[in-house]
Structure formats: C-alpha cells, structure tokens
Length: 176
Image (tube, rainbow, N blue to C red; front, side, top):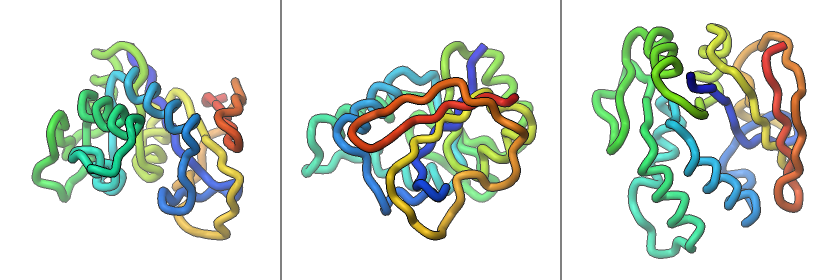
C-alpha cells in the first residue's frame, strides 16, 4: 500500500510562492532524489500547470535541472480537475470520484506518492487520505499570499526534523 505525502516549500510565516524563494543546490538535489523515488504524484490543476514547465527542455538548464526533468517526466501523474479536458504525457485526468480513485491508487501501488497543491491536499487530508506532511521551511517572510494549509487540519504529531542545505529545515508530521 502506498503512503500519500503532502510535501511543499513554505515561508516562515506559512505561505507558498514558488517565485519568492528557490532551493539551494543541496535542497534541489534532495528534490531530484525525492522525485526519482516516487511511485507517482497527485496534482491539483493549478500546481500541475506550474509543474508542466518540466515537460520541455530548456537550453539554460544545468545537470541537476535536467535530472529533475527526467525524473518528473518518468513518474506517473494523476491530475484532479473538473475543468481540464486533457493532460500531458504520463498523466491521467481524474475528473470524478476523486476519493475512490485516490483510495484505489493507494491500495494498488507501493512506495511513496505525493499530493501537490494546498487546496487538493486539504481536500484529501479531510478525507483521511494524507498519511504524512513534509514542510520545507525557508527563512523568508512573505507577509501574505497563498497559505500552505488551505483549511484547518486535524491535530498533527511531529515525527522528524531534518536540516537540508544551508537554510531549510524539513518538518515531518503525521496525523495524531
């Protein structure tokens, strides 16, 4: 049975904005290794649109970026959306019966799957489908924006804290 993990970068004050801070080389390599080992990722529509950047090569990429793109392209993806009509390579559109689909994926697959996107993670968390939360905390204060958590969560229990790179700490929580 697969474990569903919500993992995302956030500011010290709890906001997500992929344009406000970037991972250092150590953290980026961590993400390359992470994506390489996933059994798949479940995306919300908006986060999937952001991640489609990795579908096409860019001449300015370094080796780590090429490695990330290759790993991202290889992994299976499920995109939860009622408005999209199609999705890109190695992706499956999930337009209906999201709960049953995700429960089925968890039952059929082994390893770690990630859920990406705060709104989708909130929805799946409220259904009891998120097994772990990995918060990558960056030393940046944004003062506003899109919050990491799109709604209240049940009580969580800290199970690990890991410094990664020069400035980021990963806090790992499970439902209490």
